[in-house]
Length: 261
Ligand SMILES: C[S@@+](CC[C@H](N)C(=O)[O-])C[C@H]1O[C@@H](n2cnc3c(N)ncnc32)[C@H](O)[C@@H]1O
Image 1 (cartoon, rainbow, N blue to C red):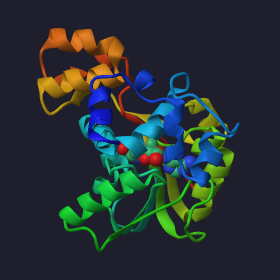
Image 2: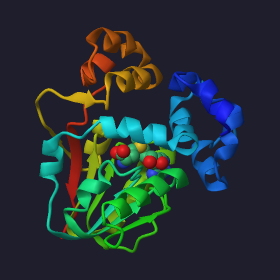
Image 3: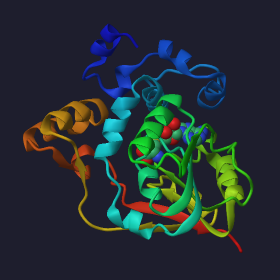
């Protein structure tokens, strides 16, 4: 995007931020998954708006994800001292940076090139470039061998929709997981869908807040991502905002399946 185009977007909420003209940013492979009918409108389909965000304003997405931290007990629940970990839909690494501590080698699969670039930069900056590999791929076609990871995990990325996982995506995650290993969906939606496929659910209690870098950032990001809560964020006058104020379920849960040994 050009400077004036970026300036025109300042403060505009996600639902009206992009138009059908922006869909040209998708690669052919992405369009096949995200535009199965061949067309779409990000102003009526917020899932499309999120996919455009990852490609047009990846740093903005990274600022949001950095503020929405995972419940420490979710991270504590994950197995550690593993040999190989695969993460799918890794984004800019909210989870990846934690997985590095738990495995000798981490493969982070991410379809959006701009997010892969940010993740690579973060891993290199933290001195982990040699133990992590950031690669292109989709849930339904993982570039990984059978039985190649002790833990296969996705955070805030998997949904039952075919473009974002679905049965084909879950089958791929399970194919890649070693017998006795674990497939984990963090911050899941559609719990019944996962339960019907043998996934058990764990949720951790306690208050949770989105931790923005500053009050100014809280207002800016709330206007874009949680417009209904923006007034309340202004009234609170703080950089730390409870998830419920923003109308968001907190990242305090996961669904998992241990693969038969
Ligand atoms: C909400 S972001 C979450 C990113 C990261 N896991 C995190 O917790 O911050 C959703 C991610 O799923 C990725 N994604 C979308 N469709 C996908 C697909 N079909 N296969 C794999 N990843 C996908 C997006 O590119 C994006 O990085």
